[in-house]
Amino acid sequence: MSELETFTLWGSLPKELRYFIMLFVDFDTQETCILTNRETRLLTIAVRKSRREIVVKRIINKQQEKKLVVHDEVDSVT
Image 1 (cartoon, rainbow, N blue to C red):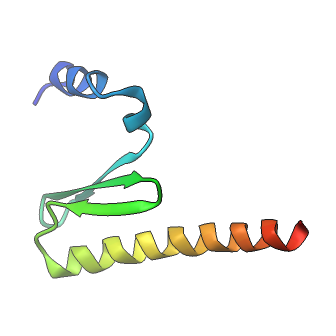
Image 2 (image 1 turned 90 degrees about the horizontal axis):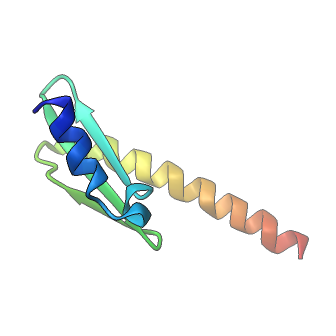
């Protein structure tokens, strides 16, 4: 896929969706994983290898832990 096609596909996405999409590429297996985050719901798409799925889940869990810590700090201040 050329850079132009990639740019065109990205440009066709709604602006609000661009901020919630992350693309992970596993360079060992050449597999891709697309994560979408909509209102704190995380969905994994095209995860085929269990090893990769575990890595992605760890990333998600770390992000959720950070969010929970931030929320706890905000709640304790108020």
